[in-house]
Image (cartoon, rainbow, N blue to C red; front, side, top):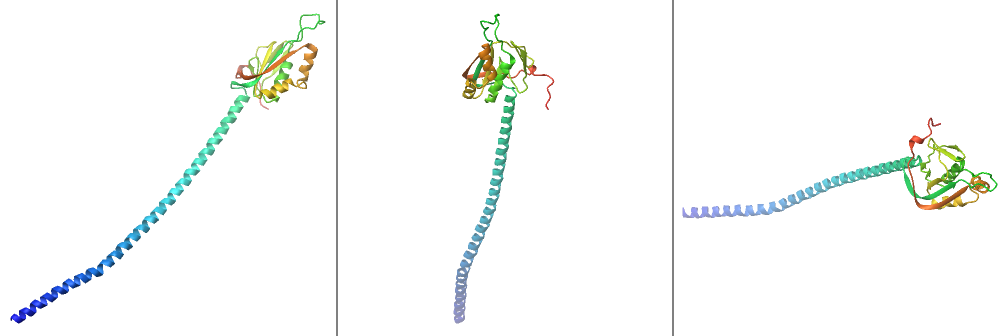
Length: 238
């Protein structure tokens, strides 16, 4: 019996040792497999993140392209709007609807002195043609705005009258001295007024009737807006 017991003890010990060895072997066999699985899982996670990031980068690029397009469109609209505003402003100025100031020239026309053989105390009287000739010359030399004795001249302005009486549109007649203010290229307008070949009619009347014409360039001249109540009535566009 004692021998059998000894054999049984030895057998139990052998079985126990076998279980321990089997567990160790199993652990050694499973650990590398688990590491590979974890590595593969990490690789998949990284690949998924990279794919997601790539998609988000594409979305961001698309959004930036849309923003750039919208900004370009807004800039173009802003530039177009500003150009239209400038055109409207130029048209308003050309029509005499706004007061203006700037460098320009001031011209004075005065009646001529009576000649020694005239037999009267009256000399040449400034008329509307004298004024109109000067105004036309100034506009031809680039004047941006012109006023005659404080009355703004527009593309619709009409000159009329007789000797000594100058009527502009429907305003009260003007008489000598007549002041003509023009805003624009001061040097160009002064040179034109100083040119003996310009204003031939006025030059002839200066010699023949002692018509007085003086002018000077000034750094700042003001002209008022047009008085719409003085416009010629019943004017229609052709």
